[in-house]
Image 1 (cartoon, rainbow, N blue to C red):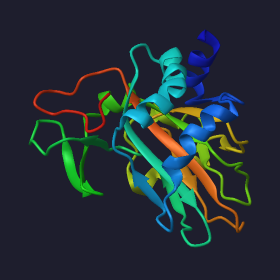
Image 2 (image 1 turned 120 degrees about the vertical axis):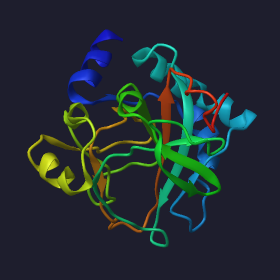
Image 3 (image 1 turned 90 degrees about the vertical axis):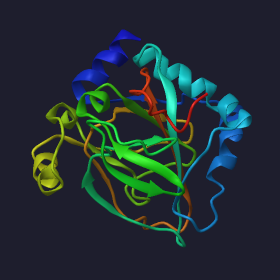
Length: 220
């Protein structure tokens, strides 16, 4: 899909509308059964790996050799509602903490070690966001600043200014739509004003092995 790959590189994001059938979506629905939790990092399991296969193929059409390296499920509801300002996601999930040159800002989230890798690795990564429910402005759909992925590492105190100077997109979606985006794209999310759930799954992809002895936490 050369047009999609070119759009991803220039704009930082590209849509695959209606990419997943209802059968494939039903296989993914259980991932977002989070109760009142706002989000969860999902460990690899055979059923999950099989359910992600059609999403993996979309990622591989954009990045040769892409494989999932982190899965995060979200379920925004009245009981679990949140807002995030403009930011980049600059951490990866690894199996163990091993001090390695260029890998900084270690944190422990949901029992998993996360670390900020060298910026070059993040520039070569992407994520796919699978919409399990419709998302619109009222339900606080994701908002992205197109082209912002090309700015490299953006300090937190400059994120809003850079995003305000960019063309922003409200990521309005239907169930089964998939958004692909460069890992460093600036994005934000408001609090939902709807009582219904807004579920989505984010899958991070890389085509690279980590610098030994570090290993991706999610490996298939």
